[in-house]
Length: 124
Image 1 (cartoon, rainbow, N blue to C red):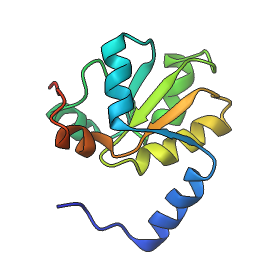
Image 2 (image 1 turned 180 degrees about the vertical axis):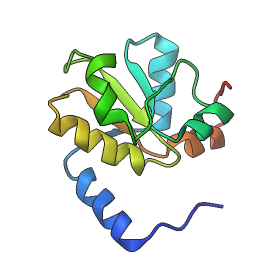
Image 3 (image 1 turned 90 degrees about the vertical axis):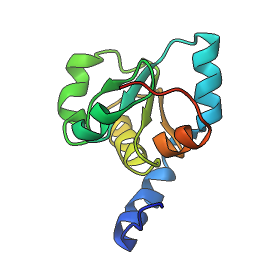
Image 4 (image 1 turned 120 degrees about the vertical axis):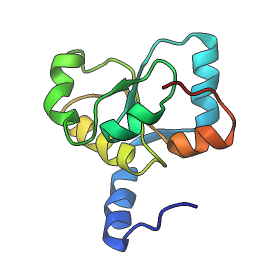
C-alpha cells in the first residue's frame, strides 16, 4: 500500500516538478537495455538501498546528496537519473541539483515501487 504523504510535502514536490524533467520506469529500463551511459542514483535512505536497488545504481541519499555530489560527479553536464521510493524525494533532489548547476538530471517518476510493479530486476 502506498504511503500517504502530508499535504505540505506534496506541495513542495509539486513545486519542484514544475522545474525538473521526469522520466518513466519503462524509459529507464529501455535505456539500460540499450546500454546508454548515465549515472543511476538512488536517493533513498541507506537502509532502503541495502535492502534492494536497481542494478548499477549508486547510493547518494537525499540527506547527503548535495554535500557529496560534487566530489562524486564533478561534471555538471553528466547525465544523472535519480530515483527513490515513488518519485517524490528524487524530484526534490533533482531540483536541488539543478540549483547547483547540474543540467542533465532526470527524476524517475514511480521510483523503485514502479520498477517492482513491472517485475524489472533488482539487486541487493
